[in-house]
Image (cartoon, rainbow, N blue to C red; front, top):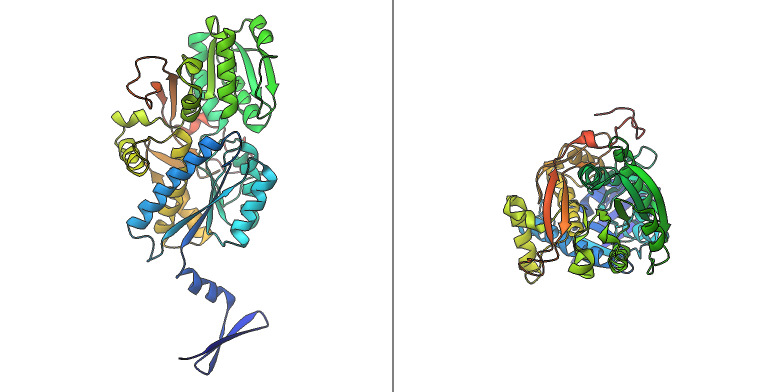
Length: 415
């Protein structure tokens, strides 16, 4: 058997093969190595903490995108691999795990996050190392010029778009005197800003913006004040376990008797955890609801794959984002004919896709996915089964005019 030895010299590798010494540039070795390895996608999400239920569903759906890609032949014989890490809902932890994924695990791309704060730290690490990051959590800031880069993509809705759609639907129907119960971090702040901005054109009045810490369990101190303000609408601008706890306590306190309760993001997982009574009559926005399958063929295809993989259960809204975020990147690899970050970025910018909910595309100036917003209301009766939790009230069609302009976000060229 021919022996092989390697030595390092002046930034180049000299490889002794069968007695001949061949100088090979590091870049060429990297290319050769890449052709024989999996396409690795890092997936940092909060598997522990207040958003764990949503994160676990993101992982489940992302694995479906990986399986689809591999079952259909991969890319030039290379299969995809999902490397999941727990960011613990902590920006520092998220940055550390992302750095490890890039430097130690040698991932080609990163998809993930479930917090406005953690996604900015993940993006900063990826941007500095020229690795594509496709975020699947709501944020306004990630698309702004100060945080954005050629490698930054945002598959999720953003708070401006989500809150705006819910405000445009709800405020004219239920009243214009608004109180916000707001999680005191970027997600909550950005959602309130989105509601208030949309509400200006509708004549809405903010009576109070009452803020609580992330992960709060007890909201009883806030409820008498909310009741005394007699709002037409109470907005629960929080997420995950916070939304579940707030909905239960608002219901128990009796606030629904005279106030319409809405949530900018009405989560499928939160509704499942909180139950019909706590969420009965609460209205909100979402990126996806599985019940859309009756009208959208792509939703039926996606749902059936999820059902087959996970014992008949259906995907959640944030789960679907995990699926789309990974599938978009892998499709761009095929379209680009490469795993090179710049080439894949260009392919993503040109992508028009319908993975599960209807037509979408990434806006060229900031890489925000332009997509529909679904307005749903929680059911409290006449449910066909445990998965039948929402009525779809309306769908706001994809329209980049509902986003903040590229100029406003600091991008010099608007599209």
